Amino acid sequence: MTALMEKFRQERLSVVEEVAELRQETQAFLSATQVKRQQQAEEQAISLRQFHKKLKQENRVFLTAIQKERLSQAKKQAISLSQFHKKLKQENRVFLTAIQKERLAQAKQQKQDLRQFRQELSIYVFGK
Image (cartoon, rainbow, N blue to C red):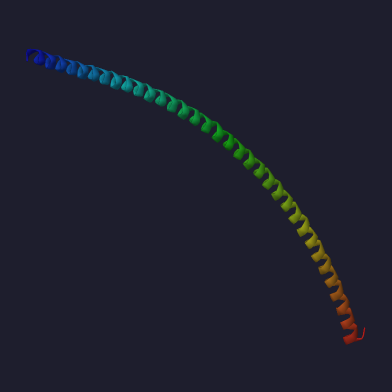
């Protein structure tokens, strides 16, 4: 019986040792996993910071280019509108001058026609 008890004791010690060994292996695995995940998280954080910085810079460059392009377009439109305004003003001046000359000529013709009509009327009425 003592031999049997000794065998149980050794088996029990063997199981306890295996459990302790498994516990140590599990702790080592968990510790290694935690370190690996921490490293991955740090790498991702660095990568995300770099990506954000690059994206911010690209946005700044893009927006600056867009701003310059829009400013250039606005200047071109301003020049074009100014030229159009000058041309329109000149055309209006020419048109109004032509209309004025035409009306002046019509007024002279009407004056002459009226004078002619008066003379004819005077001759008809007074016989002279």
